Image 1 (cartoon, helix red, strand yellow):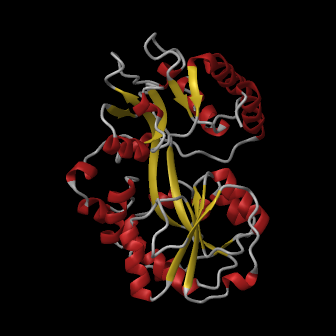
Image 2 (cartoon, rainbow, N blue to C red):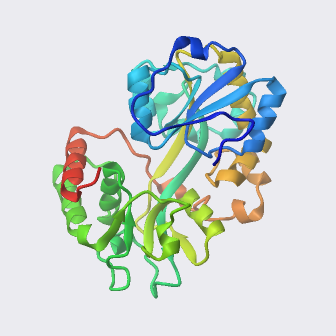
Length: 348
């Protein structure tokens, strides 16, 4: 997304971000560390006009970059930080986040309690933003048989062999291999983890690319791959942009990912942050955001406001999502396995 008049955009692609205190002194700016293109820009404009402030977003390319920025700066320079369910407990333990006065958020109750029951230790330090799943996007015109199981990516038929796109992150690769084996994505069993490592190693020659799905340089649309692991929300964007792309949540199941908003312990903008949180939690605004980024909401009121093609889309709101696990903090055996995956597959 190109820079616009309402938003000064900074894209963080490296691991070092030096933040001088004087730069962040303005009381009329709310600074957010987040993914790119994760809100409807009209909503940001509305919030800026309503509160006579400027919203400045600093974008990270992936979770690892965000984590290193936080480790080096302890949240200095940011007011709000978007964090996933896996890393959020660690952020709290590190003292990088401030408690949120959730009792002052009028619209939080609309989002139920599942968002913190799934990750109990975060209550009081986060509010829900969106959730989704992993699955397989594929070219229906290039495959006679759809890949309906994770295992289809590891034992592909002749049409699919050599035309597979897998994610470049060892953590995601390991989870996919475990699910392909019908094992829990949170297992700590060393024998099971070794089997997953072996499965990924044997798959290597059948994979065309280890790369995150890209909308502009899209390998599926170019026919360079015929199936790609993707987030469900990304799959819907691809379907909007290109023909003959379908999405399936594999038969073995998937995992549930959740993104949360948090407040930096170094923020001086607590009141503005609370206003921003409640603005995004409002069912009307929440539904508008879902309709923009296609990630699901916990708010039943917001879901009811969505157009039928989004509300009833199983890619956005999978019918069996309540059976999916959220990922736990990786154990030492899991971390060691991920390091071996990086070495065995020669991925960065």
